[in-house]
Length: 59
Ligand code: FES
Image (tube, rainbow, N blue to C red):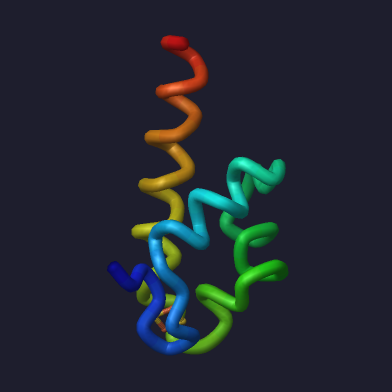
């Protein structure tokens, strides 16, 4: 499923980016391009980041 329509970035790509060490929406934007056009997806990316941080905290 696409997170960023403008740059055709999928949720899996965002997860891969987080797994590779990305800690902020800016780092995800720099490596995938997600969020650099209309920025509508930035909120979704922040949500994915937050959930992954919660998963790490409870693991
Ligand atoms: S949907 Fe991501 S920049 Fe537009």
